[in-house]
Image (cartoon, rainbow, N blue to C red; front, side, top):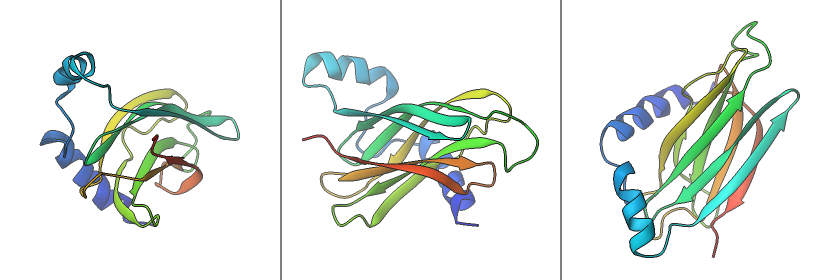
Length: 147
């Protein structure tokens, strides 16, 4: 099993604190209307009868991942689903990761989490993955930062 659990705890702590380079949720609307909006990218990942769909918002030192994931059945952790994301630099080395909560078991669940990308310019790519309840990547989509 990967280090998802430790990273998930870190992501929760990061959420409780401040996002690196991202405005507070209430400030985003004001920022988007006052100047240029932050770029976004949509994703849609399917694995059998399950999926994760949403949007990545690109900030200077983090990304925000918002969407929903679906689990078709609630038999075990293997059939439950969650979403995980990796922030990558230009050479595709991982510079941050986060997600994993909430886990959907036989239902659809909404998520909204930050992924740190604490380097100048932020992430060049984000890899979003549909994971099982054990945080194993099942299917992923690589997304390039919009220019």
